[in-house]
Image 1 (cartoon, rainbow, N blue to C red):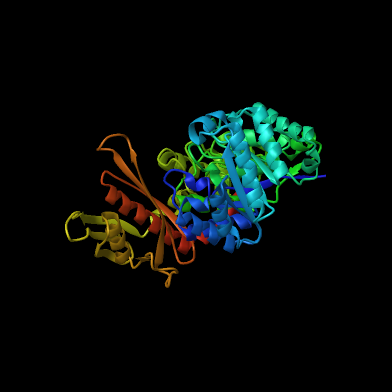
Image 2 (cartoon, rainbow, N blue to C red; image 1 turned 90 degrees about the vertical axis):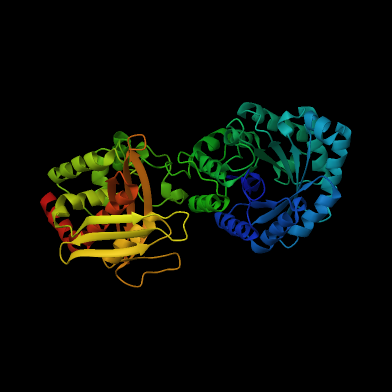
Length: 550
């Protein structure tokens, strides 16, 4: 028998309370649709009474999604509950989530009420909300700093009043896993003593947990609560939320899935969610983009480095068998592409693997040539090496003498602050057709220089208004980055670019110069040379090298 864990997503309520985050109604609707595809059980859409904007956001979400419950937060008073209902009454399955604090510190300094008064307000709020919907959740704010016996009294009272979900929040991220486990067990025992345990056993009443991450324990505490009998977890995408954030949805879900064996062994049955895990990474990236909250590279599950292997030993192990260093399949959570990352720690196995994944089969001798060139020219220059740069090193090694273009002169006049835009004049030597000159203006010096190079050689960079290329000379700038070799104002500038042609073929180039604009021009010419070489002789070279390796 499998025990179901319900995922209550509060990204659009608690997550939006993160400092600096402000989502439009359209942003909220887009995230809500993504959460519906992810198949969360409940979306907490917001706190409607907080502002007209919050009300409209909750209302819009309630009317947008269908295959998920929509919850609205309300304090334990009739006005909040009335406004919450007005916002969510259009939902397919509406839920009112009412709350009041139960810790003595909150009662004394925030509410200025006695325990008896708070208990009465909690019960009345649940009864009042039940007039609108049978799905009423009650939260005891700051539960983990509350007196356990008083908290148990409140839990029993609101259960009798009709609450179907009892949330025990670790509002300030104060508790630790074993203590939280014991608290949930204490509350389960309280239901037994009140002759209400049958509701818990039959699934008519569910304990929920809402953990904050102030001590970095939000996920651990949530999992501990599930072992104690809780069956709903309140969490957010990427763990965003007030202060240090909330328990991260992706970590909760994948911990339950990856260690299903452990939970089955301890509980006698596995715990499962209904989450479509393949939607985790796309949803994470959407939330990051719309909130502006960047996901740290080493973030579990959804961080850029979560499945990345650069160390030679680790990369070799993963190439031989993923299970050596990976406990999850990255595709299972929505990642695509190779998990092997090239950088200063990469070895020959990683270089061979990357090249073979792009169709290049090399003899040991040719691999040694490429690896040595990679190590000397790129390995210590770029922190992470895109596949296109490695392929470019191979083209340099075998076709470099045949490259068409050489930068012969470049001049960029930057008139910042003046009414005129920066101007670039370049001259490029085309070995087939002689010197090519062009003059262009741009929004910045690099923009002007790149446009001038493109014009001189018959290319065109697509702008924001260009959705699709219209000719085989249209290019898209996929990536542009700059770095420095050394320290101080006289450091050598390093520029890297990745371009893409009309067929989706990508090419990368590096350029070095003490003038960063000149470095950018060199990088672009390098990328164009490689692109031209691959177009004309790439497939032929692949066949030749493969035959040599056979």
